Image 1 (tube, one colour):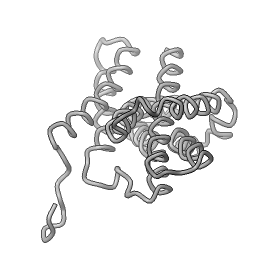
Image 2 (image 1 turned 90 degrees about the vertical axis):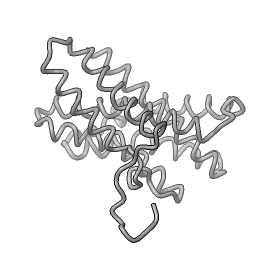
Image 3 (image 1 turned 60 degrees about the vertical axis):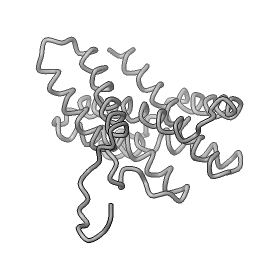
Length: 206
């Protein structure tokens, strides 16, 4: 299982770093700006999670591997930017992959800390969402999590699905990976079929 967790964590880091690079490039930031946005997108949620559960120093400060991965991802993404013809589509794809991976990593960290399932799901949602929140705020965008799109909701439902799967005879590793798939699947389905949270503002157009 440790290998699965590490692999998922690395894939999530790469996916979120790419989404950060794409947003920064769309905003036409300089090279330093691109690197900073990629960094905060990839580590922002995990940093907040670690601080909340008292896991300090936070993971990326004690494991240089993550910094090397983010740096390499920034370089490769910039070099191959011409292949990412549709930046918005690419951003959506990598952001969706990122929230799927990071939701389950956050949940796993909560379980390691001996926390209740509801708190673990909350930590998973924070891990998956708040790197993107910081990215969007720095790039002068309204964070996706605060719009009516299905985003954090996908993390919550995927986390709940994971804990339900743990009650079955399914091996832990498969339940973990299926949790990732549930988050990604819900997010993709919501965008594909225009599913959104209800509009609470009765007197305004949606």
